[in-house]
Length: 68
Image (cartoon, rainbow, N blue to C red):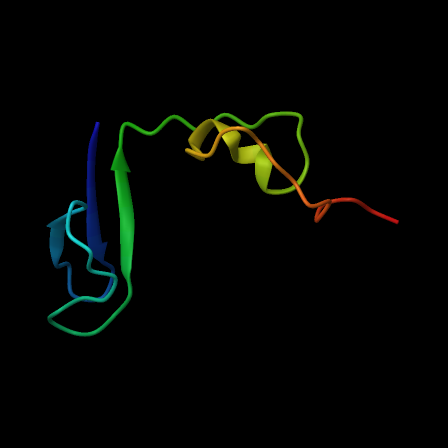
C-alpha cells in the first residue's frame, strides 16, 4: 500500500513520511492519498462506522453519536 500527500490545487506530491500539512508551493492544505485502501462500513454509529480504516484500538466512544 502506497501512502502520500497531494495538493489538490497545484498537484504537488510528497511521501506521507514527511510532516507537511500545507503545500510548500502554494500553501493549500494537502490531501492524504492511500493507494489500495478498502473502505468497509460497519454497523457501528458515528465515527466508528469507518473503523476499518481508523488505526485506533480499542474502539472508545464518549457517546458522541447517541441520540436523545
